Image (cartoon, rainbow over all chains, first blue to last red; front, side):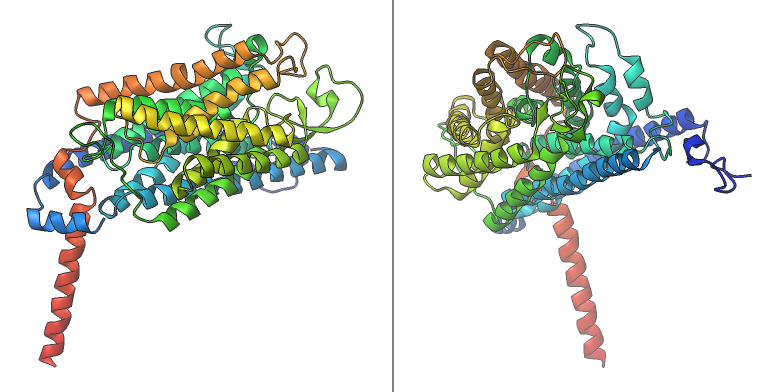
Length: 71
Length: 452
């Protein structure tokens, strides 16, 4: 048994196509990939919204003025 | 890959594109340095993160659908349906989109286009620094990097694209398909986003917000120049026979070609790259009275203006065209800034958008009547086709989607950071945590020393 469909390299390479594991599962892998991508946007957006809400008023004027001076 | 000559050609082509990809990575490094150099200290980390995360987001989406769009959309939707024959092998679940011993070129070819996608997104990223929400920019990055620019590439930067066939559109090194569209897209977003706090006085006069680190900006733009070499090489097919092209070229002489499979030479584009860079630098130095920021950006704008026809121009033409583009872009930048109160932090709309737009139109006149393609029945290069092409790139596929999506984000409060955060700086919270942690460990160490 081999996840890539080949158990040794005693083959004519002209006859060999894909050699990645789990051939036949490409669509399922694409679905997982798209969910991972969209999920990332969702997580990031929610966290950023929360973060911007929390940091709106964390700085006192003196500290902010100091930060502005640093350019 | 049977036969030694066939194997050598395949491996050479694979390696050629692979090297261009590595070079083009420097464009992104340059953009990151440039953006951070221009931004103020209180926004550095967010500015950098905003641009760095373009890399994975555009990469995965370009894998999922961007690459397929390029092959499926040459006629779609105006002049035919989706091209499934060319599109299907480039779907994310295709067997050729992975390690495959019967296909050795798709991955590197995909990567070469992908690096163009990063560039398109990165151009937009620079113009909106210090006030856009990262989440908003990343949506724009996916749209410009994996949807809109690649649609324009299918239409106007593909040997079978409808713009090439019917308009005679010619844009060998992407004045329009990368730069005009990205500049137009940035302008659309900027119009909704608004300027940074303090950019304009109460009477509407623009204030200069100088870069915090001019040296970083300088190195950044020099890295972009360097990566641009790789980009030029990546736009070519390095060696191909007339038989493989299958067009009207007779004889058996192998040649380098542009993206349309029309002949050019590495020698010619090397002349023209350097001469248009020089023309741009010289004109920008004069017009900006030696301003470092605009002189260096002018070099880039010079190349961008001449890029549409740099496969065919004479080097002196490339130099003059580069110089003309810079003068127009520089003047337009300040006019638009004053007239519409647009705050383009890095001048991206001018350097990429206006230069690219102007470059397309100039190419229509200078290359008038030249064949746009080696295939029979294609329109030849002409000013009307190039002008329509420029409008499609800058306004239709660039400005309009950027403006619409930014409007939608703005309507739900997802476009711009709150005013208080903008003033205290995007990195304020992180600085705060850093300072607290620093003070705590210093106090702890001092206490330990006192106990000894």
